[in-house]
View (cartoon, rainbow, N blue to C red):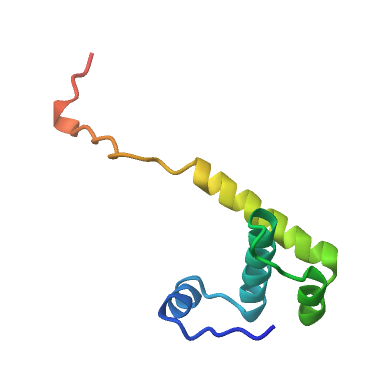
Length: 95
């Protein structure tokens, strides 16, 4: 799988997370499959991805399933709005 990893964002993510080549390939494969799942305009060939990465189709789908599950979990746990103010310790009344 030929990738262009020269964008500033790609370099930043690789540096911040210490991504290996294998992890980058997993991220890209998962993203392509999940995009194709939810966007009928996007086309991808899972067999070709599996062949390029020398992995089985079930492995590729497993990566994609875990990635989408993590994304869903993350999106459901995003707090919106202003965070609650922390109480100052000096203002707490003891009983």
